[in-house]
Image 1 (cartoon, helix red, strand yellow):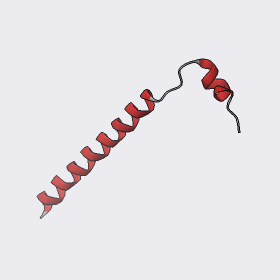
Image 2 (cartoon, rainbow, N blue to C red):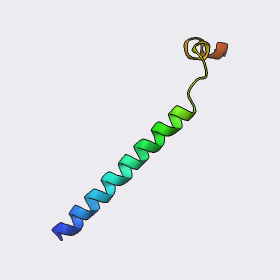
Image 3 (cartoon, rainbow, N blue to C red):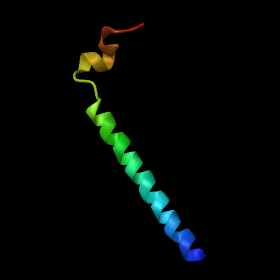
Image 4 (cartoon, rainbow, N blue to C red):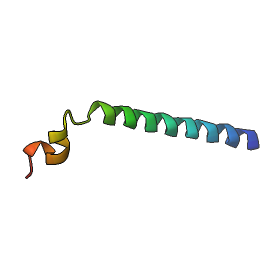
Length: 46
Protein backbone atom coordinates (compact mmCIF):
# COMPACT_ATOMS: atom_id res chain seq x y z
CA UNK A 1 0.00 0.00 0.00
CA UNK A 2 2.84 2.35 0.80
CA UNK A 3 4.35 2.02 -2.69
CA UNK A 4 0.97 2.84 -4.30
CA UNK A 5 0.73 6.06 -2.32
CA UNK A 6 4.30 6.92 -3.16
CA UNK A 7 3.62 6.39 -6.88
CA UNK A 8 0.46 8.51 -6.66
CA UNK A 9 2.45 11.26 -4.96
CA UNK A 10 4.90 11.36 -7.87
CA UNK A 11 2.04 11.51 -10.40
CA UNK A 12 0.42 14.41 -8.54
CA UNK A 13 3.75 16.24 -8.38
CA UNK A 14 4.34 15.70 -12.11
CA UNK A 15 0.82 16.94 -12.96
CA UNK A 16 1.36 20.04 -10.81
CA UNK A 17 4.68 20.83 -12.48
CA UNK A 18 3.20 20.36 -15.96
CA UNK A 19 0.31 22.67 -15.08
CA UNK A 20 2.76 25.26 -13.74
CA UNK A 21 4.85 25.10 -16.92
CA UNK A 22 1.68 25.36 -19.01
CA UNK A 23 0.56 28.50 -17.18
CA UNK A 24 4.04 30.03 -17.54
CA UNK A 25 4.08 29.36 -21.30
CA UNK A 26 0.58 30.84 -21.65
CA UNK A 27 1.61 33.99 -19.75
CA UNK A 28 4.71 34.43 -21.91
CA UNK A 29 2.65 34.06 -25.08
CA UNK A 30 0.05 36.57 -23.81
CA UNK A 31 2.55 39.16 -22.60
CA UNK A 32 2.21 42.79 -23.56
CA UNK A 33 3.92 43.79 -26.79
CA UNK A 34 5.54 47.04 -25.69
CA UNK A 35 6.17 49.26 -22.67
CA UNK A 36 3.15 51.47 -23.38
CA UNK A 37 0.87 48.46 -22.98
CA UNK A 38 2.70 47.50 -19.80
CA UNK A 39 2.74 50.87 -18.04
CA UNK A 40 -0.45 52.45 -19.41
CA UNK A 41 -2.59 49.33 -19.83
CA UNK A 42 -2.75 50.07 -23.54
CA UNK A 43 -4.61 53.30 -22.68
CA UNK A 44 -7.66 51.15 -22.06
CA UNK A 45 -8.76 52.00 -18.54
CA UNK A 46 -12.39 51.46 -17.77
